[in-house]
Image (cartoon, rainbow, N blue to C red; front, side, top):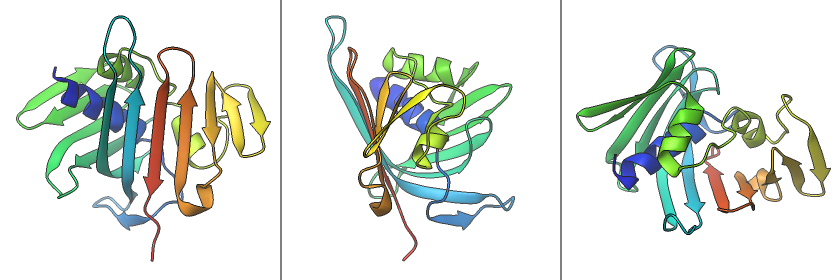
Length: 176
């Protein structure tokens, strides 16, 4: 799998995250959320730094959902669907299957990210499945610092500082 597909896989898994953002109705009535996401992983002795960004449309949560990733000019890069029985990532004419979101993130970045916690984080709250420590502008949880300093403007930033450092920035689109 190419780096672009790996990063797209990670972005897909991260985007099962959002609640309370700009949305439009889907075919089954579930709301779609949209925005931009960027992920940066610092270099290690084993691999170079990587980063990616994409526009997205998402519906669902950490247990079940669908995501469409696009370039800034609207070209579809990838789509992902996940449920209890696994994750399917489609890029062009190829499909990749994963047992779960952890497997997808491990394959995408060589790191397992706490993807089940991300829906709560992006809703502006700690995940109830693990202890957290409140801070003035957010909280720490699962070895990550989640900044909500610009949450009112649609921004959420999560940083893991243990090597390799990973930075996830999300800009949620808000209704006009």
